[in-house]
Image (cartoon, rainbow, N blue to C red; front, side, top):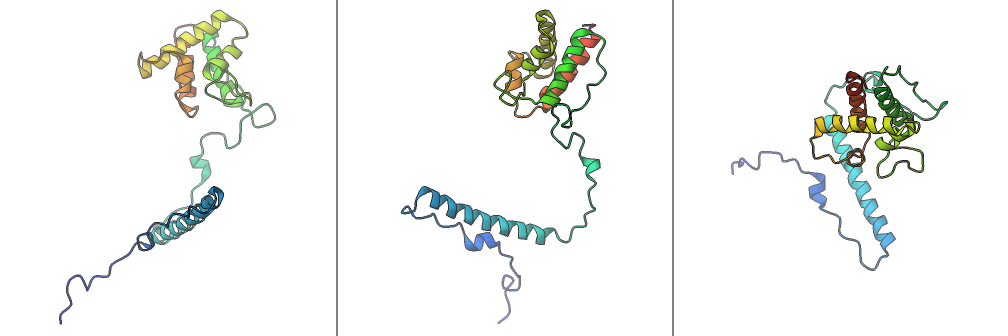
Length: 192
């Protein structure tokens, strides 16, 4: 009998498809025991996936990566003096721009947070950093917040209600820090 087209083709099977999903743990087990069983099953599946990835990518030629070409920010926690803190760059000549620049530096070195002015570790939100760097000058603080809100609204629209609302909308400091930098440039251009 002649071979059919389907019998002459070797089929590759997915190991995960062959074994199927792991059966649910018995309800007679405690919650911790069920979690332990599920964690073990997931570890096995992750190990199988790692092996499959290595097998499927072994033929790809890859050159070693020099981390100096990839890492563009600090590689250690930037904190208080003596722990990797970066020096304050040369300040803008105008007071509001310099305040915004100092606030950005404070966030880079002391940490950024959401939901509060200052968290338990000393990290600050945008408003908290500006407030701290204003040195008690409410006028300087108010002018800096106005310029920052203007810079935010230029990029994100008039629907942004306030600086704290903008700050709390992010999960990382990348965008808030970029907007502080843009606000400092804007304040300097305005002579503030």
